[in-house]
Image (cartoon, rainbow, N blue to C red; front, side, top):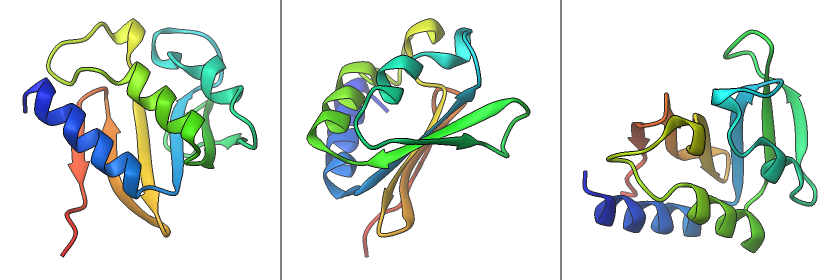
Length: 113
C-alpha cells in the first residue's frame, strides 16, 4: 500500500471511529512512541493491556484532538523510523475494531458492507 493510499484509508477510518485504543509498554522505550501525547488527551483511560507483559492500553473518545494526533504521528506505512511510529493501536466504531495496526505496519481493516 502506498502512503497516499494509507493516508486516505486512515482518514476515512478516523472519520468512522468513535473510540481508539493504543497499546504500548508501561514505560519509556522504542515501542512507547506517542505515549505522553495520548496520555495528555482529555478523558483518556489507562489500564493494563493483556496483549503484552508490563504493557498498557490507552483508550479514549475519537475527538478532533485525537484525530489530529493520529494524522500527525501516522504519516507513513511504507517507510518509517520505529522511534517515531505507533507500535500497536485500534480504531473502534460502535464496539467493532474498524482498523488495527500491529507491529508498526501489520494492517487489518473492516470494510463496510
